[in-house]
Length: 429
Image 1 (cartoon, one colour):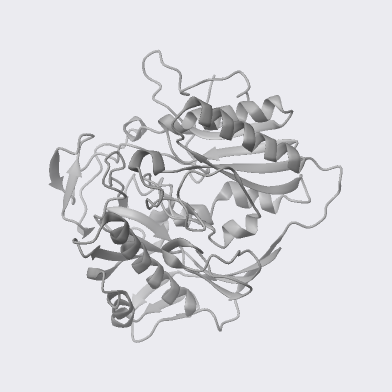
Image 2 (image 1 turned 90 degrees about the vertical axis):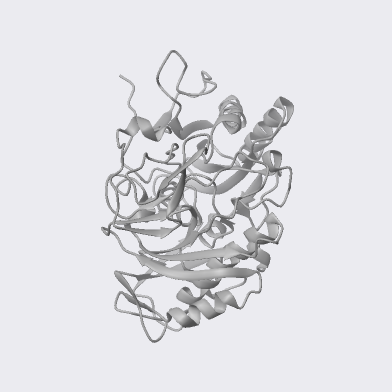
């Protein structure tokens, strides 16, 4: 597979007469875009608001952030499978992207109705919280949308995310006929056979067990969120959005997956430092120890059959899911595959370990700091001048009271840098 990514940098976004990109300025035809969103009869309310870096703005509740991308050559569509889009395999041809801009999904629609996965993520465009969240540095177009409340939860989720993809498609389409000012080609070319063979193991939470539904909205692979055996991906598929959608932390979004620095760094070093073999995506939060160990062993088996000598493992969740992640690491090491684990850490207070299940094979770890946001020393976050979304915010781990969204507020309780975006870390002395 050969994929060319054409980048159109966005330095400013304004509402105007038509949707167009020119010399770093993205102009948006607000009414035209809203008409496209509202044409879906499932949408009850929709609005568009701009939030720019450095502004005293807070956005809540944030369900996802999407980078506008469009295929201009080659099969399929960007962000395939989700919301009924084509499931044609992607990763070839040419794709255009608008860098420096995010389409933010702002809605109170729950992921599912079984409890546990609460909406608590918000973005600040200025201040200490914004400094560690990569999407706060974007020019963000917020799609504030609510579906018909009489619909079932799956239909509401589909309607809300489809609205965001509709907006993203409209923005990216403005570049389809233009010559991109920046181009980068991605291809797993033949390399020096003596280079070490490396695979990326991407562990992705599945909400199926918690929600009781195989169709629950979450991080998807070609639109599927259910528990599945490990899948082998060409990295170009991921650059084209084959893995997309949010989880419940500020770092688990469509934007962060498409711009995953761990994936991009591995890819760009292909042929220089090692032979990058591809990506194995494995689902987490199986319900029994038998299932967890089986998926770990099968993931390691696929890596071994590819000829991997080394592996990078990342994950996007916490708690229950850690067991199959760490057992995957263990199975890889026992198969002779040297493994590096990129992870945030558990609460370091008390006598508990900072990993749920430490194993001796986990001897090469890159820490992205502790997942509990209150350990970052940011509280309380300062008040803001403007709120996009709901002016009243649910607060507390028990979600038992409301406070003004304009703040001051505690940080969202969970902070997870899954892929190494931030400069935070934890060092063992």
